Image (tube, rainbow, N blue to C red):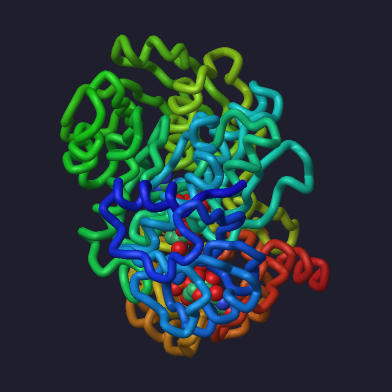
Length: 514
Ligand SMILES: CC(=O)N[C@H]1[C@@H](OP(=O)(O)OP(=O)(O)OC[C@H]2O[C@@H](n3ccc(=O)[nH]c3=O)[C@H](O)[C@@H]2O)O[C@H](CO)[C@@H](O)[C@@H]1O[C@H](C)C(=O)N[C@@H](C)C(=O)N[C@H](CCC(=O)O)C(=O)O
Ligand SMILES: Nc1ncnc2c1ncn2[C@@H]1O[C@H](COP(=O)(O)OP(=O)(O)OP(=O)(O)O)[C@@H](O)[C@H]1O
């Protein structure tokens, strides 16, 4: 793969991003044969992007390793051997040049993208499972948990971000195409719009699941309005839109879709008896006749001719309980319908999907049922605990939870409120404390807990907290290990400290108690 300076100039001018060029001694036909934003991965003739919390010495290292061109928002004098392309916005430039360098892999993929405060990973897994089963292994997945760029085991790896940096995104899309993938299901975080990771990219189908306050604060969104604005960008950039009509801010969400999409390409869905303010007729409803731990099923019914044309009406079995998962499943069925999947081919496919770290249960005779779940804000914690409360009305609910440092500050209050509403015992512990003292985070969650309703224990060491929860639980109790899912590390003072995962710890503790 290669790109000439001349091509880069045209792309940047087209998007009004080019300020000027310095040291262009080799001329416009100079070719770059690689692109990177990390000095640790530079090769000869690379183009290097100076982005984010960047230090000038990274560029000097890049030059020493053979990079010949850099893109930055201002000129660097100490790399006089390099051609400098000075732009108004480096992250936008990086996304556009990345797409060009990897030869626009998005044109070879049918892309379904999910956004929402909660349910992105679950819905993406559901959709990918349906389409991948039907297409016999030709569907890639870019999720918070992992990225799958081909059918072989070595083409599946853990994700660093929910939505990758633009260069990695286009690189992995190209790999997916080379590996025979014809579709891609991906999660698009609001942060990826804030940071221009998907700038210029258009999606075949964009799905908006829901929005509640989260991800607001240092390093994330300055305000809720900004968070909502970034999330809405997915709909603005999608050819066909699917909207959960039960989302908050439905009017704005629908308007964002309408800004670039005709009503005939916008699909709304909701639970059959949910009351909503209708900005447009609903296309699909789902009935949740049965929703318990033994069996979860939904019936999907089209209400409009365009809905009926997808042929997804029918009764489906689900592997994951909870009304929110029924909503996630409906979004996945509509998205899959738009990609050509129909009933009854899809009838039983969702009965087999497991999403790592979401609603994983471990049954023990002496210590009740233990759930490991990724719920980590008010909306998800409330949804999870209220569902489990309905399933275990008589036992005690013992919840182990912590909140991350340096971000998502509103989660602390949210946890306090959700625990007060549903838990009997809360064991507050550490979860990615980052540069904060976990004791302070625990104290903050605790101040929002109603101590008349909930007994609180504070155990910073997460292993000891899980051990305590399981040790004190009786057979009729339910233990919830919340917020960490299958995360294999704890972020402590900038270091990813290995963590065996909540599931492994719980199993180990149970073995020790047997
Ligand atoms: C705030 C934010 O999003 N920051 C992301 C951003 O950081 P950054 O551009 O400042 O990069 P940096 O790591 O500080 O380093 C600066 C630059 O120097 C380069 N460098 C660094 C060291 C070196 O030796 N040489 C070198 O060239 C780096 O490659 C980088 O280009 O780019 C980095 C990759 O280049 C990301 O790892 C980093 O994500 C941080 C870790 C993060 O926590 N992001 C979260 C908030 C996030 O993006 N979350 C959303 C999900 C949210 C949700 O759940 O909905 C996501 O999409 O994952
Ligand atoms: N539609 C939903 N509404 C509310 N809570 C949900 C919904 N879907 C899932 N959850 C809860 O949120 C948790 C995380 O779900 P999931 O990983 O699918 O969401 P996500 O949007 O990918 O989250 P994140 O952005 O934090 O990675 C689940 O473990 C479950 O407890």
